[in-house]
Length: 96
Image (cartoon, rainbow, N blue to C red; front, top):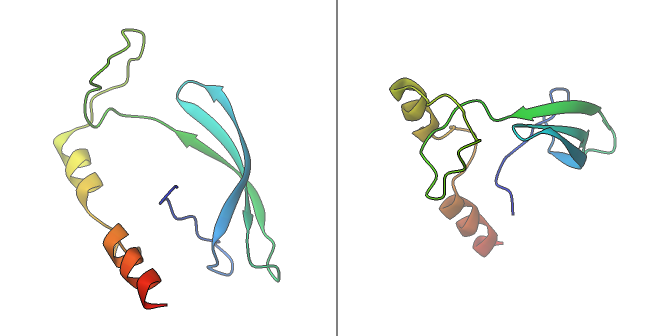
């Protein structure tokens, strides 16, 4: 299950990936739709792998991405204030 949160720029509702296709080993094109029926905004999005945050335990010599800087790795470790972490999500589900 994906924990990546896509938010509609118009109504701030949740968005879902309807379909996607790989165009390159590091690039995926996705077609995304707002789940709020009153809004219904849909977009084309691109998800690109740009930097290696940590090395693979099973490296493929043909896979070459630049290694992320220390600043970029530290930024990736921060959590967004508006997105609960996994334990918070589990607690909210149990409370229902």
